[in-house]
Image: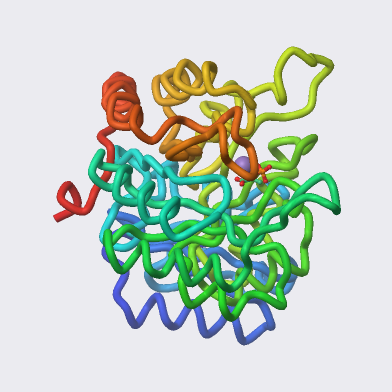
Length: 344
Ligand code: PEP
Ligand code: MN
């Protein structure tokens, strides 16, 4: 990592980039509020031989010892990343409330839910058109037709869309509608898929694998960052433990620990962790209070009839009251739910 001086000129920064790239290494420029940092990926010996410590505009060279470099908090000097997605800010003091059905099932269900969560001040709209299901015989989503309904929801409500991509062959149609591409827990270590997403450049919500360590999650994010895509949101969605009383164990300790290790925003999914509607609100409040940068939660107009994950989906009619409570808990941690109005 090359830390430039606060008063380094554009020409000085470019000269350093040219010299580093001249020995076959790659640079990732990070423009902080106060100074510019160049992340260097390549042969350490070759770069050290350039003796950049004395070069014009260079303050110091600092090695990053973590296996993940671009994801590390060190590279941004502890400053959190703040992204803007469809005019909504995420990260820092901006809390993202991401809500919508597990699966896009029908026009009425999708548009109805989108209007409800938009009216309650949600930040982004979620909905799966491609669904990873444990059983190969279960419903796997409406596919392209589901994407079309999400596009309609976006056109009607103005809400940016979060939707899952499972197979790189579906990347093109997903890119047409997704403002954020979700990578599900089961695909967290699908490294070829992550690399493609890094190249696609669209923001990614990367869910933690069912039994992945935080270091594995951060290394997975590095696959995306390394390709030049800076916009990765990490998501804690519950992990496998010995406990069987609920679907997964929501690891809320991961939130402050990740925030120490990385500059990337950390989102919590209480729905898939709990698997039970009655647990979703308490876990959401805890997640907001512990300092999460957002929540992704499932909402359905009539969960009893949902094709997928009915028992954990919040009832749409109750979402506004839920959102208000989450907003209060986020305020405890110094954050405000981000909407278009708040960003303006
Ligand atoms: C989902 O968010 O719809 C989902 C399938 O989540 P996960 O990948 O965390 O199981
Ligand atoms: Mn689901």
